[in-house]
Image 1 (cartoon, rainbow, N blue to C red):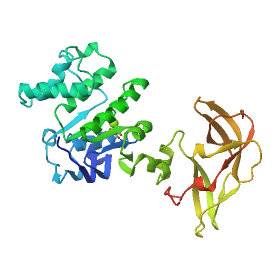
Image 2: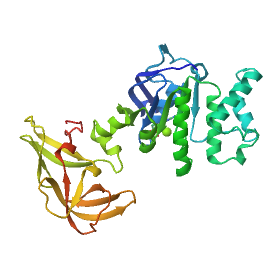
Image 3: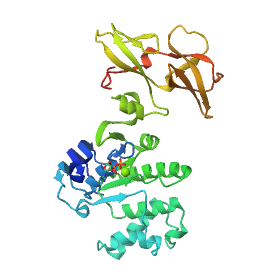
Image 4: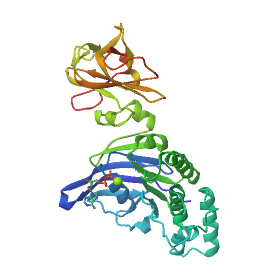
Length: 355
Ligand code: ADP
Ligand code: MG
């Protein structure tokens, strides 16, 4: 199967005569056979990026390459992409087999080859026993499998998926998540997958491109994205719950926290307002005054989630979240949130990672 890397170079897309900037100077390299996830909140420009890659939109500026071929002026069918959406539009009057065969019929694939490809795709998606059923007789998960089969049966060089699992219930979503990942790696096909769900992004992506306000904020492997969020915006978006950011001032190699106390940092003499980031799982909640670094507060609420417990601590009127395996503290308790200085992230007043 043909594979293709994708390159977006300074791609912008404006709507409404420039009033709406859906994509702003997007630079993105998707490698051959890679599973790249576009992750961002609603309205951040993910679908627009996908539609630009598909050829359903024309860039206002910039270039799009498939391999070394510039495809700006190529129609969607010339690009040989397959797109799967949240709303899998199957033809209701056609059988499963008819639906899957349809893109092959319109492409003049011979009947023998058609049969081979349908068998291959339906076996891969475990729907070979459903061929004669109508879409109305299928569950949501089965329908989504049919639309995936219909997409891959064409042997596209690029697979584009726009929140394809968001209409499924939680259990099915988990199941389809690993199934899709398996499918993509078995086919070795370049895939761009759009989601606003960070867990989906982390579990599926070879790399994740985080989008906000039409721009790409960071592209990294899931672990790297979690370990080194380059900006406070990304830090606030990744993690469950996301990183706590405490306001402070840097002076003489230490950060004085607005909520009291100070933390020493790699001394370089610089000064100014900073945000000190600590992940909820890097806090330990204690009722005893500790010897190391800590911030002081009062327990606001405790959320026991089984696998772990989130302790919401009110610190100078703001909620700081700690994640503990289990806890004995209760609402109203005065507590210390202990942390290690090696677990601290430091961001400057523009929200860029310092260390
Ligand atoms: P996402 O998929 O991340 O939710 P979209 O790419 O759909 O974001 O949209 C990004 C921005 O562009 C939004 O403000 C949206 O309203 C706007 N937009 C998208 N498509 C169009 C269009 N065809 N006409 C006008 N505005 C659009
Ligand atoms: Mg969208």
